[in-house]
Length: 210
View 1 (cartoon, one colour):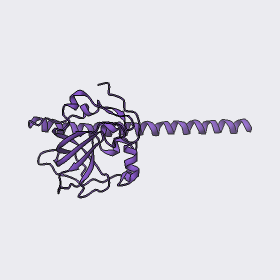
View 2: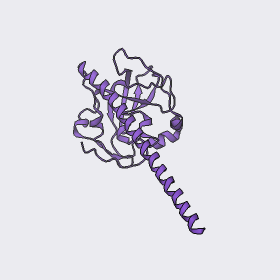
View 3: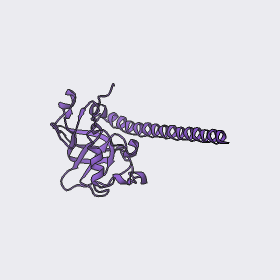
View 4: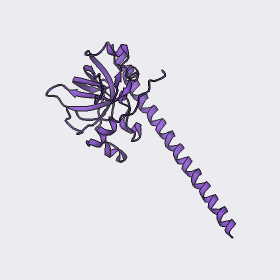
C-alpha cells in the first residue's frame, strides 16, 4: 500500500514537471515570436525611411554601449561622434507618467511587453523630451523621432541617452496611429516610481557579439 502511494505520488510529480516544462517552453516560443515580429516591424519602417534618404540612428550602434548606472556608460567611438547632433531614430514609445499629451517619454527598440516584465537593459532605453510647447500621445506603432542626441556620460546617470527638442510622427509616411493599450500584466509599468526603478536597475550590460 505504502509503495503504491509513493509510486503514484512520483507519477503525479513527473506529470506536473512535464506540464510545467511545456508551459515554460510555450511561453518562450511566444516570447521569441513576439520579439521577432516587433523587431521586424521596426526594421521595415527603418528601411522605408532610409529609402527616402534619411540617415537613421541605428539601435545596433546604441546596443554597442556597455556599462551600468553605477559605473556609467562606455559609448562606441562612432556614437560619440554624433553627440550633440540632430538625429532621426525609429522606436516604440513607453510612458513614464502619462499616456496622453506627454512632454517626456521613453523610446525603446521593442515594445515593453517584449521584455516580459523584465527591465530593459539601459542601452535599450532612450529618454525623449519634446520640443517646448509640443506634446505627444503614446501609440502602438513604431514612431520616428527627430531631435538632438545627448550622450549622458559619467557615473550614476539615469539614462545613457537623451533626445532633446524632439519632434515626432508616424514611422510610416501617411501611416495611422493607434493609442497604446498596455496589457494587464504590465499595468505596474504605468506612471509609477516602480517602473522607473526597474528601468534604472544596476545590472551589467554586456556588449553584443554582432
